[in-house]
Length: 254
Image 1 (cartoon, rainbow, N blue to C red):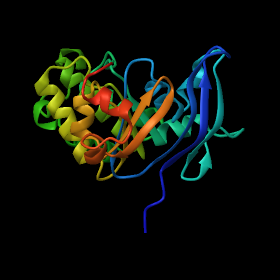
Image 2: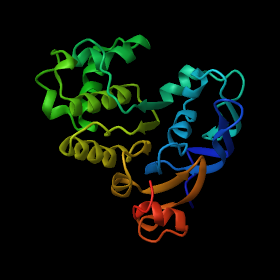
Image 3: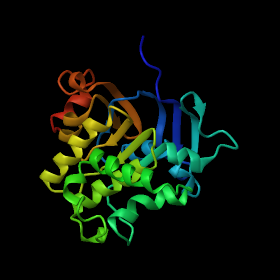
Image 4: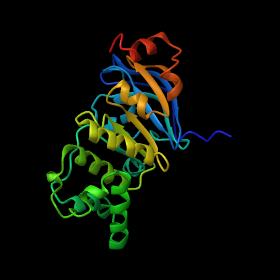
């Protein structure tokens, strides 16, 4: 029997200005323990959709959503929902890494300690687990008390991923996490996604269509705010059903 979706979007539309729609009537199921890649040209609604999954668009003045977004069957936009708790369950890694102005170790312990965790043994164990999951442990295990600012851009991005993992989320959202990275760092981040999906629901807006094809267990093609096509990655990138999907994948536009 197929596993229940982690997220379910039902007829979701979103507008920033009350007139033009960034998303229009999107219905989508996102399943656990796989990498779901949402791809398409710029201004297609990909990042908007991603930000709706942990209510980051609440911070946008004038934005309005229609439809429902369900996490484990619960409407995350219902009145009274604890948004802080939601964002602990649904962590996000952005395109530009922003390490805190402190050591590598303190970057990782800051969130849990802010949440009241004081168990040093647990923190030290979690530091190692999170850095290993982000494919960074071997590179920084002897430098944990060095400033995070001394890390390379690729290392800083993986540190931000590890920082998200420290809070033990259920879902990891990644918005173009390798857009500013070199090929070697990009490959390390992509490799870490294949490890993370064993324990987490992973949703990524990839840097380009080639990355989408490499990482996607399930792929979603968006165009001008509409969901055009979805399916297993290996099928969608080799046998797309919609001509617009094929045109984008083969580089005819975008």
